[in-house]
Image (cartoon, rainbow, N blue to C red; front, top):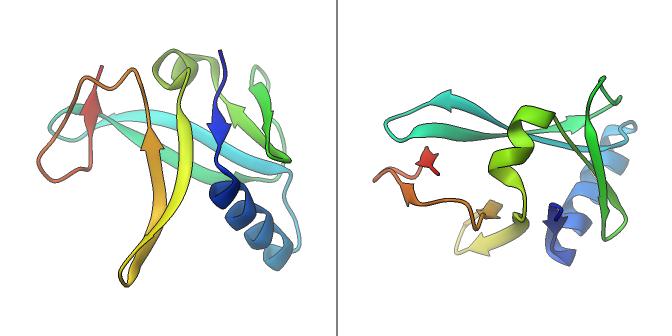
Length: 107
């Protein structure tokens, strides 16, 4: 499988990278934290790291470390605007439960 971006997420990433003036794509990962166990990590990538798995989606390179891929495989990243709020939304088929505050999840 792979990790994909919606066109809204890809457009946002491309605009932000252009505004920054550097970057090769988006780095996704997970870290151990929160009341449910795992939290998503998201940052703009300037270089690839050893072992990164690379995907291309809607013209954006997505980099994921091998440990995180097991938790993220099949995930779709969207960029949504809800009222005055906007941000990335992870549509992860591996997610079994999410904590009440929405900061962490488990598989």
